[in-house]
Amino acid sequence: MKTAIVLHPEREKSLKRKHPWIFEGAIANVIGNPHSGATIDVLADNGEWLARAAYSPESQIRARVWTFEQDCVIDDGFFKRKLQQALDVRKDWLSRNDTDAYRLIASESDGLPGITIDKYANVLVMQLLSTGAEKHKSKIVNALSSLFPGHIIHERSDVDVRKKEGLEPIIQTHVGELPNDVVIHENGLKIKVDLIAGHKTGFYLDQRKNRAITGALCKGKRVLNCFSYTGTFSLYALKGGAESVVNVDVSESALNTSKANLALNFDETSQAKVSHVKEDVFELLRRYKEQGMKFDVIVMDPPKFVENKWHLVRAARGYKDINRIACELLSDNGYLVTFSCSGLVSQDLFNKIVADAALDANTYLNYVQKLEQDSDHMIASYFPEGAYLKGLVCVKRP
Image (cartoon, one colour):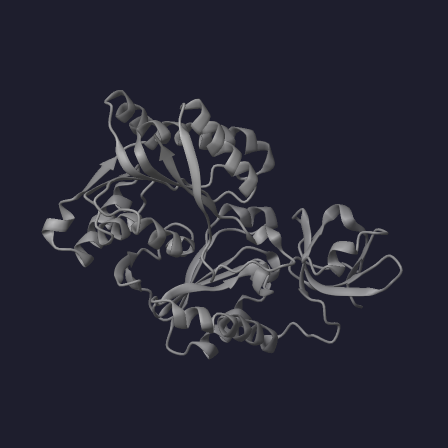
């Protein structure tokens, strides 16, 4: 017996616009007894076939669409085609960019819901965040092995969001032997990446073009790099001719990696221009303010402050607080490069937060440029939720 879900009347509209999520409240009836991760048909209330999806009985997103084509089978060939299509659509971008590390699969935006795959030199790292992705793990690994022979395939499905799908965190290497560190190349720089314990799949590939934009602002400037992690913004700042750079992070291991990255790219004289401070950014900014410190470029790239809509107000206060003090530490005609990677914070809301921060700091800011995730982190027209990273380059008017 085929398993299927039947939607309430009028709840098929988003599916007909190709949005791939079906929430629990949209479902009127479940036909059969589909298990977690099972492939099911999605039907309108009048019986019209709409899509084929992966079923997730524990998630508010009860089903995620694999295909809107009725004759499409979710088999090994399906995943190989999807991976090849994702690679093909990035070929022009790859030919224009100097890097051997990029996002191959951006989940729903590449037609593979709950699946993220990043390539770091000869290592492919995947995160599987949905029951459907977990169900077809072996097919995904086989497809990657076919398209990228000789590559190591590692899984970093160790994020809390899996719990919403009833899944446990998993870290494992499926093909080959994972080295302790991988060195990638990006715009003439060498960057050490921790694929075992690093953030996300190991590194923030989404900030690539924003690092380059920031580096171009730094010639002769005093730079403060907040939430510096492994210091990649500082590499671009130094490459751009910065006079000095201060990297601030609470993680000693991240700061040690930052020092290693500096040594990979610069001589001792240049390395001496960069200092590392292991401290809470919020506390350090306040002390710098008391000391009357000034910087010409401040990079504010904090971790995600908001995981759900109930935390949004508190997160907005946090973003406002750090940007307010940054405005006070910024020299006249200096640049604030500030980001939010929280998907629930819209660009308009972020603009307002930064504007309010400047107002409270009695500072005049001009927005010079809006920033977003790099183009390999594609955003499908039918899936605006794929746009999560937003940023601003601001200049402080005297």
